[in-house]
Length: 231
Image 1 (cartoon, rainbow, N blue to C red):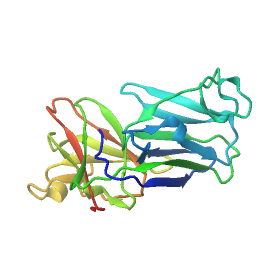
Image 2: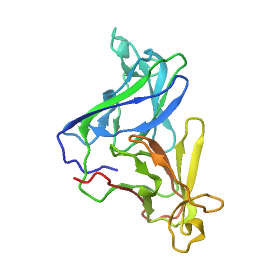
Image 3: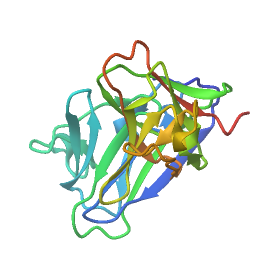
Protein backbone atom coordinates (compact mmCIF):
# COMPACT_ATOMS: atom_id res chain seq x y z
CA UNK A 1 0.00 0.00 0.00
CA UNK A 2 2.99 2.30 -0.39
CA UNK A 3 2.60 5.75 -1.90
CA UNK A 4 5.23 7.47 -4.00
CA UNK A 5 7.65 9.64 -2.04
CA UNK A 6 8.86 12.86 -3.58
CA UNK A 7 9.77 15.27 -0.80
CA UNK A 8 12.23 15.98 1.99
CA UNK A 9 9.76 18.23 3.78
CA UNK A 10 9.32 17.34 7.43
CA UNK A 11 5.68 17.42 8.48
CA UNK A 12 3.97 17.60 11.83
CA UNK A 13 0.31 17.21 12.63
CA UNK A 14 -1.83 17.31 15.76
CA UNK A 15 -5.30 15.83 16.19
CA UNK A 16 -7.51 16.23 19.26
CA UNK A 17 -9.48 13.44 20.90
CA UNK A 18 -11.83 13.56 23.89
CA UNK A 19 -11.54 11.54 27.09
CA UNK A 20 -13.27 8.13 27.12
CA UNK A 21 -13.46 8.23 23.32
CA UNK A 22 -11.72 6.57 20.42
CA UNK A 23 -10.44 8.17 17.24
CA UNK A 24 -9.81 6.53 13.86
CA UNK A 25 -6.74 8.09 12.30
CA UNK A 26 -3.67 6.83 10.47
CA UNK A 27 -0.14 7.28 9.16
CA UNK A 28 -0.02 10.48 7.14
CA UNK A 29 3.77 10.85 7.21
CA UNK A 30 6.82 8.59 6.80
CA UNK A 31 10.21 8.60 8.47
CA UNK A 32 12.78 10.73 6.67
CA UNK A 33 14.32 8.60 3.94
CA UNK A 34 12.11 5.62 4.76
CA UNK A 35 8.88 4.14 3.42
CA UNK A 36 6.83 4.04 6.61
CA UNK A 37 6.05 5.73 9.91
CA UNK A 38 7.50 4.31 13.13
CA UNK A 39 5.12 3.81 16.04
CA UNK A 40 7.55 5.86 18.13
CA UNK A 41 6.85 8.91 15.96
CA UNK A 42 3.22 8.92 17.12
CA UNK A 43 2.88 10.56 20.52
CA UNK A 44 0.15 11.63 22.94
CA UNK A 45 -0.03 14.99 24.69
CA UNK A 46 -1.96 15.89 27.85
CA UNK A 47 -2.63 12.21 28.55
CA UNK A 48 -1.49 10.25 31.60
CA UNK A 49 1.20 7.71 30.73
CA UNK A 50 -0.25 5.20 33.17
CA UNK A 51 -1.17 2.63 30.54
CA UNK A 52 -4.82 3.65 30.13
CA UNK A 53 -4.47 5.08 26.61
CA UNK A 54 -3.94 2.74 23.65
CA UNK A 55 -3.12 2.60 19.97
CA UNK A 56 -4.56 -0.33 18.01
CA UNK A 57 -3.99 -1.43 14.41
CA UNK A 58 -5.49 -4.21 12.31
CA UNK A 59 -3.16 -7.06 11.33
CA UNK A 60 -5.55 -8.69 8.89
CA UNK A 61 -7.42 -10.87 11.35
CA UNK A 62 -7.28 -9.09 14.73
CA UNK A 63 -5.92 -6.02 16.49
CA UNK A 64 -2.37 -5.52 17.70
CA UNK A 65 -1.98 -2.81 20.32
CA UNK A 66 0.35 -0.84 22.56
CA UNK A 67 -0.28 1.24 25.68
CA UNK A 68 1.00 4.75 26.43
CA UNK A 69 3.27 4.20 29.45
CA UNK A 70 5.82 6.21 31.44
CA UNK A 71 8.53 3.59 31.96
CA UNK A 72 9.05 1.65 28.72
CA UNK A 73 11.38 -1.30 29.42
CA UNK A 74 11.34 -0.25 33.12
CA UNK A 75 13.41 2.85 32.37
CA UNK A 76 12.32 5.84 34.49
CA UNK A 77 10.73 8.73 32.59
CA UNK A 78 10.93 6.77 29.34
CA UNK A 79 7.48 7.63 28.02
CA UNK A 80 6.30 5.75 24.95
CA UNK A 81 4.43 2.73 23.61
CA UNK A 82 4.75 -0.48 25.59
CA UNK A 83 3.05 -3.79 26.20
CA UNK A 84 -0.06 -3.23 28.31
CA UNK A 85 0.99 -5.85 30.86
CA UNK A 86 4.77 -5.66 31.02
CA UNK A 87 5.49 -2.16 29.65
CA UNK A 88 8.14 -3.70 27.41
CA UNK A 89 8.75 -1.63 24.28
CA UNK A 90 6.43 -2.26 21.32
CA UNK A 91 7.69 -1.43 17.84
CA UNK A 92 5.80 -1.27 14.56
CA UNK A 93 6.06 0.52 11.22
CA UNK A 94 2.88 1.82 9.62
CA UNK A 95 2.70 1.87 5.84
CA UNK A 96 1.72 5.23 4.32
CA UNK A 97 -2.05 5.52 4.57
CA UNK A 98 -2.44 2.67 7.08
CA UNK A 99 -5.06 3.41 9.72
CA UNK A 100 -5.16 2.93 13.48
CA UNK A 101 -7.35 3.61 16.51
CA UNK A 102 -6.41 5.89 19.38
CA UNK A 103 -8.35 4.95 22.54
CA UNK A 104 -8.51 7.52 25.35
CA UNK A 105 -9.07 6.80 29.08
CA UNK A 106 -11.41 8.89 31.28
CA UNK A 107 -10.13 12.15 32.71
CA UNK A 108 -7.93 13.32 29.84
CA UNK A 109 -8.33 17.07 29.18
CA UNK A 110 -7.07 18.62 25.98
CA UNK A 111 -5.68 15.30 24.76
CA UNK A 112 -3.85 15.40 21.43
CA UNK A 113 -2.34 12.84 19.08
CA UNK A 114 0.75 14.01 17.22
CA UNK A 115 2.85 12.48 14.48
CA UNK A 116 5.83 13.80 12.57
CA UNK A 117 7.97 12.79 9.65
CA UNK A 118 8.49 13.31 5.94
CA UNK A 119 5.45 14.27 3.90
CA UNK A 120 4.45 11.47 1.51
CA UNK A 121 3.67 13.10 -1.82
CA UNK A 122 2.68 11.73 -5.19
CA UNK A 123 2.45 13.32 -8.64
CA UNK A 124 0.05 10.60 -9.75
CA UNK A 125 -3.65 11.33 -10.25
CA UNK A 126 -4.61 8.90 -7.49
CA UNK A 127 -3.21 7.28 -4.39
CA UNK A 128 -3.63 3.55 -5.05
CA UNK A 129 -4.04 0.91 -2.35
CA UNK A 130 -4.16 -2.75 -3.47
CA UNK A 131 -6.40 -4.85 -1.23
CA UNK A 132 -7.62 -8.46 -1.25
CA UNK A 133 -11.00 -10.14 -1.45
CA UNK A 134 -12.82 -11.29 1.69
CA UNK A 135 -10.88 -8.85 3.87
CA UNK A 136 -11.13 -5.45 5.52
CA UNK A 137 -8.58 -2.66 5.55
CA UNK A 138 -8.21 0.46 7.68
CA UNK A 139 -7.04 3.42 5.59
CA UNK A 140 -7.01 7.20 5.97
CA UNK A 141 -7.44 10.38 4.00
CA UNK A 142 -3.76 10.87 3.03
CA UNK A 143 -4.18 14.48 1.93
CA UNK A 144 -3.73 17.73 3.89
CA UNK A 145 -7.18 18.81 2.78
CA UNK A 146 -10.77 17.60 3.05
CA UNK A 147 -11.73 14.63 0.91
CA UNK A 148 -15.20 13.87 -0.43
CA UNK A 149 -16.51 10.32 -0.24
CA UNK A 150 -16.91 10.46 -4.02
CA UNK A 151 -13.12 10.93 -4.31
CA UNK A 152 -12.66 7.39 -2.96
CA UNK A 153 -13.40 4.76 -5.61
CA UNK A 154 -12.94 1.02 -6.11
CA UNK A 155 -11.70 -0.95 -9.10
CA UNK A 156 -11.53 -4.68 -9.72
CA UNK A 157 -14.63 -5.36 -7.63
CA UNK A 158 -18.27 -5.83 -8.55
CA UNK A 159 -20.45 -2.76 -7.93
CA UNK A 160 -23.31 -4.92 -6.68
CA UNK A 161 -23.34 -3.62 -3.12
CA UNK A 162 -21.05 -6.25 -1.61
CA UNK A 163 -18.12 -3.90 -1.03
CA UNK A 164 -18.51 -1.13 1.50
CA UNK A 165 -16.82 1.78 3.25
CA UNK A 166 -17.36 2.56 6.93
CA UNK A 167 -16.31 5.54 9.06
CA UNK A 168 -16.64 6.31 12.76
CA UNK A 169 -18.84 9.29 13.71
CA UNK A 170 -17.76 9.33 17.35
CA UNK A 171 -20.35 6.88 18.66
CA UNK A 172 -21.05 4.42 15.81
CA UNK A 173 -20.22 3.53 12.22
CA UNK A 174 -21.76 5.10 9.14
CA UNK A 175 -21.65 3.01 5.99
CA UNK A 176 -22.02 3.18 2.22
CA UNK A 177 -21.99 0.39 -0.36
CA UNK A 178 -20.24 0.36 -3.75
CA UNK A 179 -23.09 0.14 -6.26
CA UNK A 180 -23.56 0.56 -10.01
CA UNK A 181 -26.85 2.49 -10.00
CA UNK A 182 -26.65 5.27 -7.41
CA UNK A 183 -30.08 6.94 -7.14
CA UNK A 184 -31.37 4.29 -9.61
CA UNK A 185 -29.42 5.87 -12.46
CA UNK A 186 -28.04 3.25 -14.86
CA UNK A 187 -24.23 2.90 -14.92
CA UNK A 188 -23.90 5.49 -12.15
CA UNK A 189 -21.16 3.86 -10.07
CA UNK A 190 -20.52 5.21 -6.62
CA UNK A 191 -21.37 5.03 -2.93
CA UNK A 192 -25.00 4.42 -2.05
CA UNK A 193 -27.20 3.30 0.80
CA UNK A 194 -26.84 -0.46 1.24
CA UNK A 195 -30.61 -0.96 1.07
CA UNK A 196 -31.92 1.68 -1.34
CA UNK A 197 -28.78 2.64 -3.31
CA UNK A 198 -29.66 6.28 -2.71
CA UNK A 199 -26.53 8.47 -2.88
CA UNK A 200 -24.47 8.76 0.34
CA UNK A 201 -22.20 11.75 0.91
CA UNK A 202 -19.51 12.43 3.50
CA UNK A 203 -16.48 14.68 3.89
CA UNK A 204 -13.34 13.16 5.42
CA UNK A 205 -11.13 15.51 7.39
CA UNK A 206 -7.36 15.36 6.87
CA UNK A 207 -6.02 12.23 8.54
CA UNK A 208 -9.54 10.82 9.16
CA UNK A 209 -9.63 7.03 8.94
CA UNK A 210 -12.11 4.59 7.44
CA UNK A 211 -12.60 0.88 6.74
CA UNK A 212 -12.83 -0.68 3.28
CA UNK A 213 -14.61 -4.06 3.34
CA UNK A 214 -14.11 -6.38 0.37
CA UNK A 215 -16.47 -9.22 -0.61
CA UNK A 216 -15.30 -12.63 -1.87
CA UNK A 217 -14.47 -13.14 -5.53
CA UNK A 218 -12.74 -9.87 -6.39
CA UNK A 219 -9.67 -10.86 -8.51
CA UNK A 220 -7.53 -7.72 -8.04
CA UNK A 221 -9.43 -5.09 -6.04
CA UNK A 222 -7.93 -1.67 -5.49
CA UNK A 223 -8.86 1.47 -3.58
CA UNK A 224 -8.17 4.72 -5.41
CA UNK A 225 -8.13 8.10 -3.67
CA UNK A 226 -8.11 11.15 -5.92
CA UNK A 227 -5.02 13.29 -5.49
CA UNK A 228 -6.49 16.77 -4.94
CA UNK A 229 -3.10 18.29 -4.14
CA UNK A 230 -1.15 17.65 -7.34
CA UNK A 231 2.30 19.26 -7.47
